[in-house]
Length: 490
Image (cartoon, rainbow, N blue to C red; front, side, top):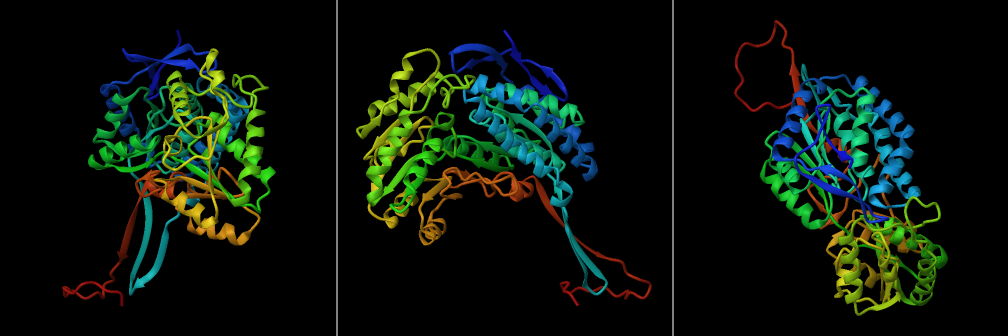
């Protein structure tokens, strides 16, 4: 059986211990992936540290050229990457193609690194004194990424880290690792020196080794809130810079004046696309007043019409969930809920593969587990309130704050919502408001641990540190007497 290996210092190698990789559409084990030991992680960090010495001194023009080459290679291999995602994650090919495109957009942004790293200069800040600032790379950076976007989420991290002069060790999800191995090959083809980008596969052993390693300067993480909190606490305790993006319970508030046909179509796509396995999936609808009954009717009709099947089948609109354990957890939450189950997709779990059909609950209460927990599956719940004020209070009381959306025809209501909702990303008649690469992605509350979001301007700031220089060149007439007062501009 095929073994997916680590990439350390440009060399591929395995480990004594391996983990299974499945095709979620069939439930069949299709490969084994190497599970890194602490020694493997040491080797990867050492390779990255050695490469940093030269890579950090490489000109911005050359770094940009590597990113332009990488951008072209990812574009040319987009279909291959998408098929790897579908084979190991299960999402449909069209969905996987979209993921590759959105990830490649971060490489597009990183191509402009000469502009992104422009400093600021002040001439004659004081008499005969100039001042300027610039940013320098941190060193070895690590990325720990989730199964749900095996191409896009790592691409949120390493292109910017590498373009700004750092080296990188990626620990992708062990559930769908093949895409990261192909990315490593593409970097090599783009002219990136050995050791600048490394991949170590595995589980908690590899994660803890990265979090504790004294030569890792920064850690980027995307995953569930409990793990994000753990990563943040452990890495910060080890003296590292950390951005850890956690879970979500994204709400869509629908007002009576909204176009309900459009809202139902948009929310259905956002709730059931990728089988609900998106950190920006809409998993809770807050129906306001008279919108509730007609909206639920439309959502139910849309959910029942979804074609569920293998992601590689062009007829499929929704594929399986990623593992048998994920399927069983989703079914358990659906089974135990006392809310009204309007659309029941549990019957699909009886066949091969890890399938759960679309499920829709109505009359859900905020105390119910099906609302409180991040299900990460094709389950949408509807809560009913009387006013926009009540809707805002409900959304803001939730511990998560990743994304939120409002559907309305009122500019005043939309502006009130976007200013008042406690979430990091807000959509107005847009259910999945994922920012473009030149903005930054991240949530609030229990959806983010750390101070900075990923990619965009905050990504550049995360992977670099500022240095301020004050310069004076005294001439022959300069006073020889020392000055003991605190320096001020004059």
